[in-house]
Image (cartoon, rainbow, N blue to C red; front, top):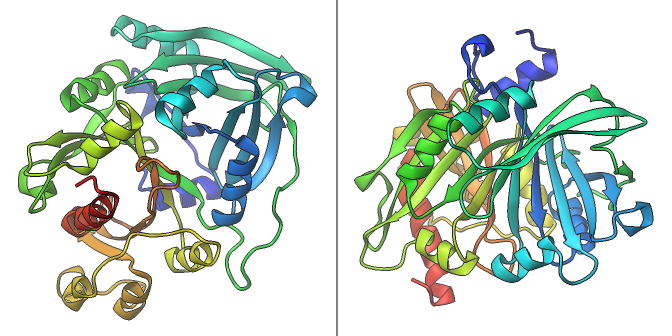
Length: 387
C-alpha cells in the first residue's frame, strides 16, 4: 500500500504502523467521522468551531430536505465531527439526548469494501443495523452500512472512494461558523483522531467482539496497580485495527473503596458509551494555549508531579517548566515519548471529555500518567459529590 506525504505525516502523528491488508479479514482505512447527538446542534457546532478551532464544511437540515434533524460537519485536518440535533420532538437524536445527554453515538470507520466487512461481521455474530446500500448525488456515490457495538453506539462503515462531495449525499457545502483565531496560534489545534475510549460494564465481552467481528488485535492491557488510586480502580484493554489507525481502549470498573470514574460515567450516561476522544496534535503547547484562551477547561495537575518528571521521562521537545505551566503530562516507553492533557467534561453531565496527545515515537497511552490523571478526575468527582 502506498502513502502520500500527508499520509506519512498522519502515520507518525497517530502512531500508525505498516500493515498488509490482504491478510486482514476486516481491513480499515481509518476513522471516517464521529457523530454526536446534542440538544442544540447550531450552538454545539459553534462551540467546537470557537473553542476547538474546527471548521464547518457541510450542513444538512430542513432547508435542504432533512425534516427531522439539523447536522453540521466540522473538520480539523483529518478529524471530522458530525454534530446532530433534532428540529422537532420524537426523533432518535432527541430521545438519545434525553436518555444520555450530549454524547457520541457513532464511531464511523472508512473501509475499502463495505460489503466484505459486513459479510465478515455477520459471520462472526455481529448485529447489522443497516445493510450495505448506496447514497448518490451529483458528486458520486458513497457505500455505507452500520454495525451495533456497546450500548447505543454504532459503527457506520463508509466507502467514499467514488465520491467528491463535501461529506455525504444530502449535505451541502457550508462556510465556517467562526473565523477568528487567537493571535499567534495555529490554524488547526489538532490534526486527527488518535483513539476513542469506551466505558462498558463487561470489558472482556467487548474486547472479544472487536477481536472476532472486526479482526482487531489486543494492543495494550492495563490491570491491577497499573490503573488504580487510593480510592478507585478500573481495568482497560486497547484493541486496534491492523494498521493502528483505529484504536479503541475499552474500560470497565473494578472494585474500589469509592465510586470510580467509570461508575460515575455509567450512572450519568445511563449505560455504556464513549467516554473520551483523543485528538492528535503536532504542537500540544500551541493547542493548549489557544484552547485555554477560547475557554476550554483542562484537568489540573499538582506541581509535585513535575518535581521528578525529568528523572524518568528524560528530555522532551517541551521544557518541564512549560509542561508545569500548562499542566501537560508526559510519558516515555520503549518506543519514545508522548505529551498529553485532558479536558474537563464538555457538557453538564460528567460524561464525555477530550484528550490532546502529541506522540514522539511512543505507541502507548500514557501508562505512567494514569495515577496522576485518575487522581485529577477524582478531585473533580469529589467536587460534584460523586466520589
